[in-house]
Length: 59
Image 1 (tube, rainbow, N blue to C red):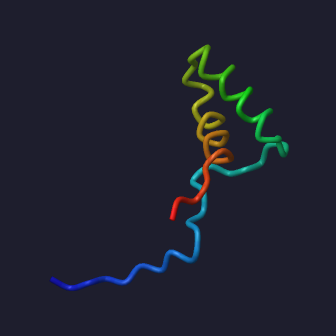
Image 2 (image 1 turned 90 degrees about the vertical axis):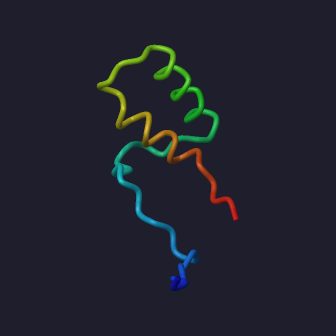
């Protein structure tokens, strides 16, 4: 079986455009909690964007 090298030094681009205002960590977490508390499929892009802002690279 062949070994395929993976370059982990570059991050993959987000699948959701980040066109919203810059939020602090706390503001982002509060907004995510509000959006998740009232489920609405129209907010899925926003949920994905907020989760993306809260993620950190685990190495």
